Structure formats: C-alpha cells, structure tokens
Image (cartoon, rainbow, N blue to C red; front, side, top):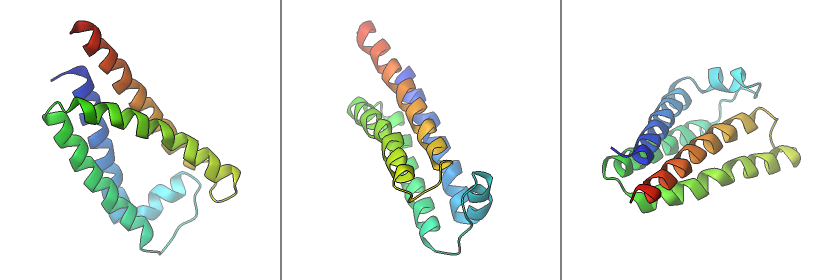
Length: 121
C-alpha cells in the first residue's frame, strides 16, 4: 500500500468514527466542541453522508485510485475555508473550524505522500 493510500485509509477510518458518533450520539460530539445540542434529523443525515464517504475513501485506498487521492486533496483543503466563512457569517461557532483543521491536515498528508510517489516514479 502506498503512503498516499494509507493516508486515505486513515481518513476513511476517521470518517467512519465520525459517522458512528453522529448517527448514535450526535449531541455528545456537538457539546464537546461547544456546539448546541439538537434533536433535528439533519445531524444524523450528515452522519450517514460521512459513512458513505468513508466507504468511498476506503475503496479508493484499497484500489490505489490516485486520481481520487488528488481530488480529495483539493476538496479537503476547501473545508476549512468554508468553515471559516460559516463562522465569519455568524452561521456557526468557532469550534466548527476544528473539524476543518482535521480535513486540512489529512489533505496535507495525502498531498505530501503523492509528491513522494511522483518523485519515486
């Protein structure tokens, strides 16, 4: 398994854990990050989407789908930007940015690993 695939697989595990938490005990996670608890179904919809994305990431890692790795870097790097906009607009509280940091760090790991792969090839 390449370093890039490993970074994607780790991100898939993160998405799976996030999904289980959002599906089963969303308010524990929300309150941990200073976000208000909810009884709305939408937080569980986000959990379902995270689970499905996790399956995509896992499958891409297992098949060394390098174009997916590259696309994921670009997409994951936009997450903190969106979250900063959401906080600046007053739509969310600052702890949401912490989730964006996780995405950015994962993207940086994958990007670095892809560069290592390209220089080895």
